[in-house]
Length: 197
Image (cartoon, rainbow, N blue to C red):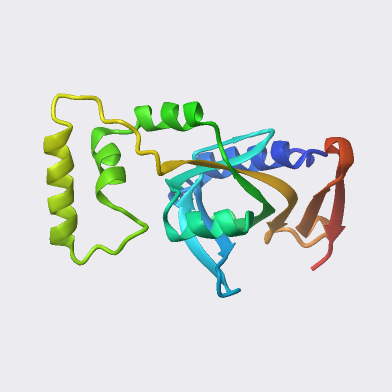
């Protein structure tokens, strides 16, 4: 492996593509999103990383879902990746903000028709009584939008998680670089700290 970068996004990019190439079974874009609910307790759920840039990490969801409401009330979140075969972990702590509508629209338009219909049929902010009800909703919207472009719901879109701290853990290492943390300072300057086991 190359020497770690002084920028955590470059470090993440290196690890991401190394794991994707060597261990595709690890499903490299699966991550755990943790938010704080109105009851004060943290809650985790699995979401998919759809993009990452120098600005941060992107995922898409229903803004009226439980996680969307939690982010609206407290935008401080964490993301965690665990790549079992590679014996690596990444933990990201930052702030989630909605991305511009045109970016959400671009991603929505790239999705398969079935996935687009699901954004209308599976109202994550409300309860669905059964699989039958979900199938009925899918059939309803399939008929409604037949031979038409499916519009993006106003309640659906992307979030950008802008990182403040990123920790990399390599369980195959036994030296001081086993546990490496980057902390964001002013002027987009990162401080790198190493920890031993």
